[in-house]
Image (tube, rainbow, N blue to C red):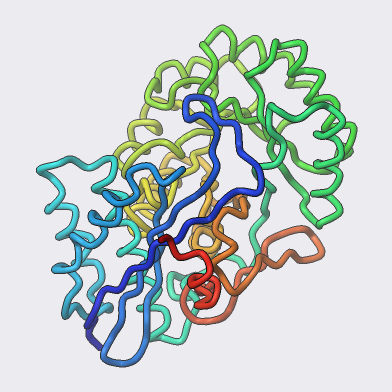
Length: 363
């Protein structure tokens, strides 16, 4: 089997309401480059990368298409050669930012092809460790919500079957954040896991103070308390708190995750699929974490991250955020324990819906 053509589609997926994000302004849309690798066997591999608010979307699209010469005529069973050649090829511009994001979608589509050729789900192709993964509901408990809105939304997530969720902290005064965390905990009860995400808003003293104030509410972790690149600061917070620190979604490549692990800057690392350069880099990051006895979670992309976490021994939980759902046929399935069921269908187990792609195609 050979790859004969790269086809791309650009889609605009507006959020139902703006997401308030520190440093990024109001997030109003996620804008995706959908990647299709067609083959002479009739199989098509699919991948996806994205931008926010259409910013630099055309540049991202061009970056994706720049990798076409590396996949034309490639046997997907030799997909590792793409990642190696792409990594070398982007060296002139660097192994972070748009270069590595551009290669991520291609790497994902190649793995999708390999699994489809074997009529196996990606998780089984990689050697699955589990057929369901704990999951938490992300997005929807923002700092712009009132306490009443937080409680209603959190209770709604529990009704939908989620046994975990994440809320925003760090925007309000510490006593107000404590009140908000307390309110969510009261709404969901003691048996639902709760996480707090500071989105890099805090200083070290602020993070330690807030962390100590909310530790009594039994949080699963405090996420990205300070700027992601300040690993020494993260490490000092992790050492000061009993509550775990999670970070890593903003780091680029497994080498960035390795620096975090070496400095013990997080108790849980959460590599982002596109910032890792695709599933190849994601799995490398996960295995590096395993060597340091550190568990991993994921960031976005639950349609692909689910299969990867199912094949990683040290995976503990999947992040679910419905950003890309509008262009997919399938939806996440939760079992009686509130875990995400890993699909058994070939490839990622999630596939683009042609009618939805048409509907959301960017002008």
